[in-house]
Amino acid sequence: METSYGCWNDRQAVELAQLMLRDSRQHGVFFYDFTSHITGWSEGAHFITGWTASDVLGQPTTIFWTPEDNKHRLAEHEVDTIRVVGIAENERWHMRKDGSQFWCSGISLALSDSVGRHTGFVKIFRDSTNLRARIKYLENVAQECDIRMKDKDVFTGMVAHEMRNPLSPLKTSVELLKHLPADSARQARPLSVISRQVVFLEKLIEDLIDVTRVQTGKMNISYSTVILQEVLYEALHHCSEAAEAKGLKVHHVMPPVAIYVEVDPQRLLQVILNLLNNAIKYTPVGRDIWLIATIDQTHFLCSIKDNGQGISPGLLPKIFDILTQASSSDAGRGAGLGLGLAVVKEIVSRHQGNVEVRSDGPDKGSEFIIRIPVRRPRGSDPEPFPPLDQCS
Image (cartoon, rainbow, N blue to C red):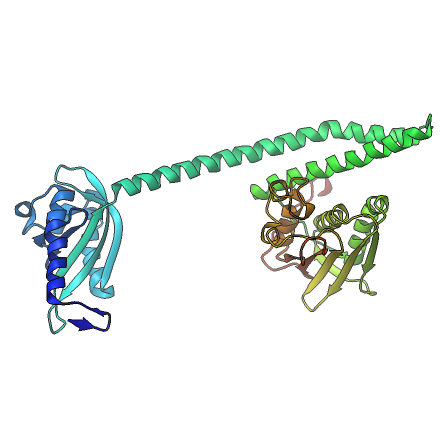
């Protein structure tokens, strides 16, 4: 016999029928008519369910279904599905003779005669209880991991907030020391180191807090209208000392006319600062960094480009993932936790924008480009209410 789907001979068909209906215990097969009464029962069906052919022939297929499923008339629904679709597949609990249940994975088909008239139905099934148990185990493990991750996020947030407490008096002390007469010139350098490390710790703490906000869905965007260039100049000002310390030249190119944008100014400043600090960190002494801003009909674009260490091709696809830098030393980017870029991606996404990275490889520089709508997108998060003491 040959069809458009393949070919087989009568002997092969007989052997398959014998295998499925008499020899196989892994698969059960039973036949039933238009009234959903069982007309045929295989050895595999007997082995899986415990019912013999004499137990079930002439019985309704509902004996095979659980009481809950019979309440919803799912046996009837399966027949209707076959008539409309031509096939019905399901995975659900079914009954054994002893009253126990097994997880059944099965397929039901319509049988036809030589002229295409339906003559009844056949169901081929197997006992997948062990597979179901493994799936359930994995689901439980995943749920436990999710709970532990949430607990970790809460713990991380608590630690970050607690770290703020000793950091505040440290910052104050450093500022006071800067204004006191120095006993010797040797005091200036260690004081400068302490000052820079305090700033680094402050940024790390803020990144940790933002990461927990991201992972718990609590990062808010508060929109207002600002001049894009003012935000960018503020970012450049904050980074100037670090750039000068490494002898880096930071160039900037911006539109000559004030560009008004609707964004969260503090979050946008955070994005630009993260990207500039990242460029400063991975650009060797004496090289260049560029901040370029432009605008099109709907979006503004900011590009932070450097001719520094670059990024390897293997790291590019996961550069915005949390802890990427901690797990990779590619292109010298093994230092730090890699929190800043994850926060950048989230803030830009919350503005319904996107961020991309380009690099030709190690020591060939890199470029980060953010693209954000000029106007606040419809359906974005509502602006928060002012504090009660400002509503009077």
